[in-house]
Length: 497
Image (cartoon, rainbow, N blue to C red):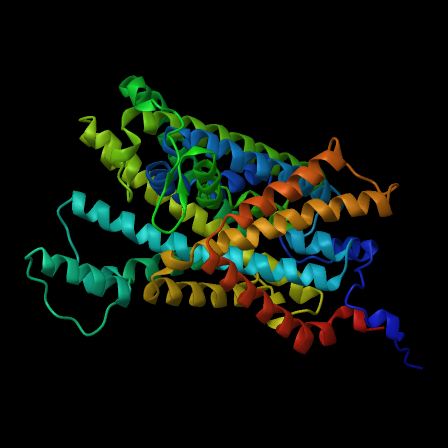
């Protein structure tokens, strides 16, 4: 006789039993090939990229001045609280799905869905933004070798028209064009997609090689740049507050907080380590280690680079598009511009790789639970990767990157992540209260303090995002709830016997 769930079991707050996660791990088709340092490398690969090579100029020039280092400290602290909570969850539930999986077993289905939906926004928008940034640095590299492609082949339609109008206004002859596409962004996404479909081992090996190149370059920037620091550029270290015509405060404490919200995008990615738990050899110990280690290493490098950069160049003179490369060019080290540009391209490639990797594993976890169609959980029989969802993600990211001026909505990536971090801090505390005897290979120290500060810090940074970003985030969240009630709630595995 068929058994039916009672009405109360249809609650949106129903939780996935913790023993079900153990069953998922045992029947997983993914290859367990990632070591402790392989996971740490993935974390560093996800974090060091566009943030350190691009956002430093904007944040220092417009908002924080030399106090950019303090903005990185503030953003790093907010991330650290979340990382400590992530680490405890990862030791309890070492499965793919990251914050989505953790909250599904502790708080409830709709809470988990909302986090998963926000992580989709984080990884999708993040990968798209990075693809466009990659194209910009690739264009700069071509220019260094005196090879310039047409505007309509290097930019989306809107950006191409804007650039063409500026060049014509400056007296340059620019041919008319009926269509424009950011071809480099489109192509690099498909290169990354191919690597991800081939297998996690190939993806990890590619990432490890890129991480070595870009970390070596970052260390080069710190060591060599230190000899060109003029301490007068650090005065005043915290510039006096300035209010613009819109009422927005630049510099001072408010400017530092705003800068922290901007550079927070540079930290997005350490949580991608937790999405790889299904492919880790010893996930209960290695995933927590990799989360914390990658965050500490990257935070230290960020602070040192920001100090060197604002010491080499007065913050008011920083280049907004390629601040690190331009700083070395101004110092007469033109040969270093080639090295930094190549490292930036490599760094952005690995960020894109890890973000798209994390995206497909979130889809995989949600599809296994029935909240998304089985299409997203299809694993290739040979490569052992979720190949269908990987190709779908690659298709969406490539088209959006090729045709959209994504920089105008890149803060959406940060908004989804900040909320997810705050929710995870609360969820791990709730689980500690509800299941005090649960085995925890890693325990977050001073959890009540860490969780409270994590919630407050991340929500505070989220509150300081632009108004139109908040509105767009509400629209995205509302769309997610509609999808949940129309599909996810009815097809959830918890509806089955």
